[in-house]
Length: 201
Image (cartoon, rainbow, N blue to C red):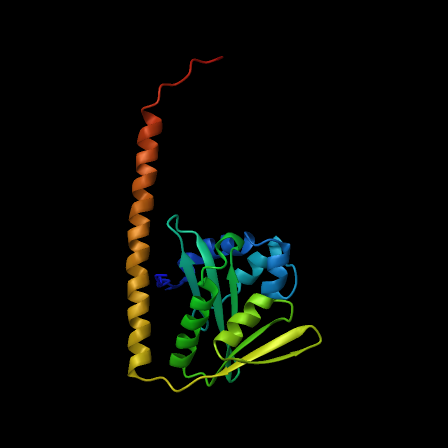
């Protein structure tokens, strides 16, 4: 089976509308697993609005329609970097969550964070699986779980790898933007060429 490399873009404040749409697309169960409680739409919007892109890092996997189908929020938290990951239901089972986790791992390492941390509900079997696969130590009690991973110091290779990944992701995003724009123009021209129905019919 051929392995497909998942392109992950580090997001900016310009991506906030798409990020908000991604979180709002999660159903009540998914929101509970992602945030620890089933946040309502107002709380989700407030969460996105409070993200500090100058301090934290946010990553996204974007489809051909420029929709964010998987996201990771990496926050500086004391002597560790804390990560939250979400993947839209219909796109699960494709390795997107693991790819976001690996990207965040590299970024946290380049930050100089000594540890990567994830907190989730013990019932979140997908995140528990990804954490174990990444080699994280897991402590579970009272229905919640903490996963920890000690990070090695950054080096030239880790810095260069992250720069390369971001440039490729940005190039891919630009291509998708151009294709999406071309599709909109083609659709508009197609609609303009259709005969209008007589009024009243």
